[in-house]
Image (cartoon, rainbow, N blue to C red; front, top):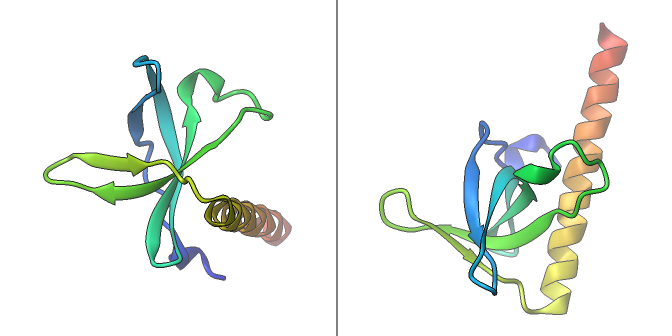
Length: 104
């Protein structure tokens, strides 16, 4: 699949509100479509230098103005499909990086 299937925005920060009411600042790693919906991969800014850091996946929608609407992915099958697609995106980017290095 080509990289035109998802959006790699310039560094976009989203404040993620957790179940306990605390907020966590996250950078948007990728936004991509799947199953007729939009999804987003988020990484807490506190973990930017951690290669093993957990990435959070959510359904994504744009509200009015600059409003961002994130929904939890409750269905296990849907979550697996989204996680698999995100892994494919990472593999595609890694392949592109390798081929770009070979061309230099």
